[in-house]
Amino acid sequence: MKVALESSSLFFKNYTGIPFYIYNLFDAMHNLKGVSPTLTFRLKKKFSSHNDFHKQLLNKKHVWHFGNQLLSTSKFDVSHSLHTPFLNLPKTLKVATVHDLAVHLPQFNDFDFATEYFKKKRMSLFQIFTKKADVIITVSETTKRDFLEFFDFPQERIHVVPLAPSFDLSDNEEHQPSEILKKLDLKAQSYFISMGGVSLRKNTFNLIKAYHLSKSKADFKLVITGKIEAEHEEEIRNYINTNQLESKIILTKYLSNHDLQQIYLNAKAFLFPTFYEGFGIPILEAMSAELPVLTSTTGAAPETAGGFAVLTDPFNPESIAEGIDKLKHINQEHLKRAKAYALAHTWAKTAKMTTNVYKKYM
Image (tube, rainbow, N blue to C red; front, side, top):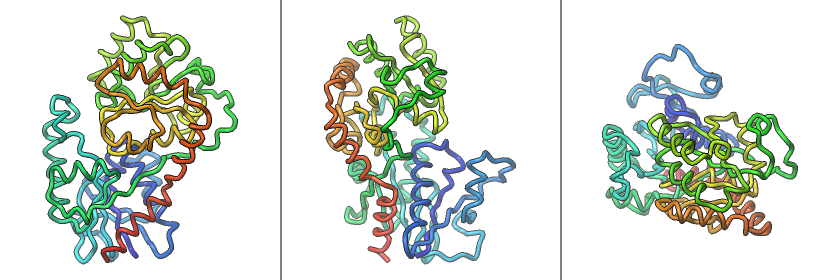
């Protein structure tokens, strides 16, 4: 089975979320008997320079396309659009993955998750999926339900294929001091970690307010890793300064995978009160490191957490604060069961489920 994986997002988005999905799915498919995956990239412009990750991509099996014309004589059985654009190759089974519809949900109408231009562009993409895809894959039951609220597509042709952790944090028997902890003046088990940076959608402001309200603030710092969105940075830093939290809250921006793993492995708990996730890979990553997890009652977060997280109302800082203080009561047996649940999610399983969807319709 020859599979063309439309993977242009690997060039045009930061290597988080959707790019993690694309790259890990491609990698895992290589280990499946009888499956030959190829990365396909839209020839949008000439790339005069590439970072190291892009250079690695171009060393892997790939073809370029312009519109729906491959710049290659390769023939494929399946064309799978993993994000955008939609790859409509003739004489192939056409599959599309939908990750989330957060920017279109009415409960977030007053939130500036995206520009109107982005919303229209994303809605147009989903309309193309609806008209031209033979099959749709969603990353959660939540996303499937959301999609069916907006679009008329045969429900039986939408298949849920869960994702997996982006990197392995399961080998955490020893928590050795690391350079990144020294650099940030942190000690093992002395801080909470949160992923997603300073972001409206990741609910950073309510998290910081909740941390300030919590009793746990006295004993633990809060480390927030990831991109700092410029439009929210001033408000966040003013709140931190006004409430004298400079010594308690650390904003790291992006970290290398090695440093991020060390931050995870030495943390006390993981805080992720996001407003909405289509899946929520960081939840599984934290569980694989045996961290107590706090997340939201909204979106797919409860589904991904599988009953192993403290769930809180992301719109209510008091609810999040109460959840933070509950984390210290989670016992080791619960954490071990959560870890086993998280490790049952693998990219090999995701790839197998995905190719099983292909076979069902070929």
